[in-house]
Length: 489
Image 1 (cartoon, rainbow, N blue to C red):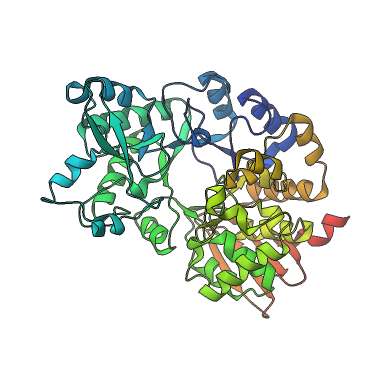
Image 2: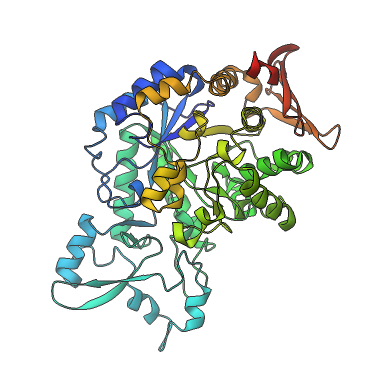
């Protein structure tokens, strides 16, 4: 099914029920027309990071089901799959064959061999300055030792966890793997491919090895050339300054709006609408909006949309008013740092306040682009402290496993019922045409009006909201669609 301008659910295969069959049942029986697409987080056999260390893209993890279950979802929803273009598991055929056969392996060029990489730079490289320059996700060189069957040892580039070994995307053997994998994904129902961690994929001497131009554009274009004949698109994933997604947008790719979550929190904490209004005016239409994902609430993404002082204010306020949120949950003790992301569900970040939470989703719906709703957010879920402490993984605070009876109870809550109603209306309204227009005004310091109109001018939806009072009214072609008072009706 082709991409549709309808809200997309982000979920794991085992997060809403135990498997893909349960997920489809939940969507059909409990969620209905509120969701038109599904971003199915990695469902392949994996050795870590809840699916993001895939070992085999040719199979569905048997615990979740099989390809027929994925394809059944694709009959009713447009689908997005993840492709980890930067890395693959140590348990993959590529790694295992290389480890056994060393330089006799057909995969000897598949990975980035650290010592060989630096040979091109001359003797005595890398220096400490070289290591310091690299944009790293750990406080040491991004390497991992590999000991071969012949007894020799060398190092491979390893940006993320120990199970995730970086791929040399410029090697012919890797290019063949990328093409085959992407082609297979589309054949199994994907209309959109999320390129996870793509900005780390290019490594180049004397750079920080992050979003390296112009080479990164060559890689993105190669992927697009594979998918274009298959009528599928890519969504490059990057958490960084908003100017980078804007640059990607200028190349006519879909992008993520990762600045919206913190900007919306700031708006609802402070009651001031100026920053949100400015950001909505700047945002492209060809994007997917988020308030929450399987990762934390992005901080770095909102830099210069908010000032440093405003980011600090919003971050501190989150710890102050958030429900069961502690600064330590976004620290090295829980495998995260809050200078990048803060670990919390969005509902708990707003103090489990139904009115504030519903308004946050109203802002998201009226923002340019297509809304993505994380499954915990769809059910207005609170922080899962038990799972957090059991795993000591900060992001698991927002990765609750819902049983079917929990979901049945959750959708009866007024805040969830109103959110589903809001999304259903948004999916059916022509006012949110991506070829249409948006006008934003701030009548006072605490109020905002947003007008969305389809490209013909026939359908107009207007939001009038007060961020301080947490109230709103939505009107479409003169008729009231929803108000904040409906939450308490």
